[in-house]
Image: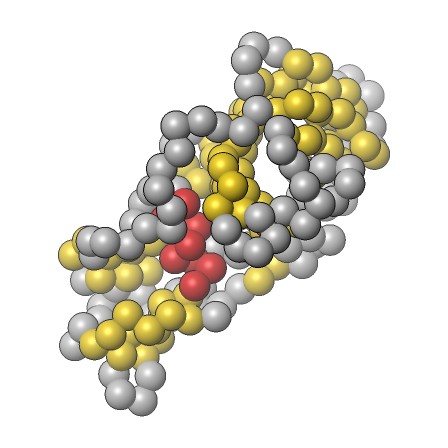
Length: 205
């Protein structure tokens, strides 16, 4: 789960996803489903003094166009794919389980009302294929708040807008942006999609 970037001498920090990390820091946890998260150190050194950077953290940082820096110096030449001018269109969004409703709003946005915990929202995008690998960044404003790794199936992809089993209190509202980078099952780049959920919590919560 680490990539060898070579010898940088003494490394005091590595910058990923717009944040500076030291060797004692863990990466932002990656949700891989069913309340399971991947966690590990951001970076470490091998026996020869080479810098080993966590592959998952590096990939999410490149997807977010945040790049990577070492000792506050930006490293050039790191990318995953050529930028695409066309995003994948969202073709369907609906609640699959739990107490809540979802309605289409302005282009690319959906209004969600939660009245209970564990609301599973399913969505599909153009040219979706079972087995697609989806790296999802969750944003609130410009801040990345979560990383998720999904595998699309016949029912599409899914999202939970609250932590599992967390009580939902009425009268709350927030905006959750989802940026999905889709790879084919063989790991080749497909395209990206953008989803925005305007979330409110209802009186039955």
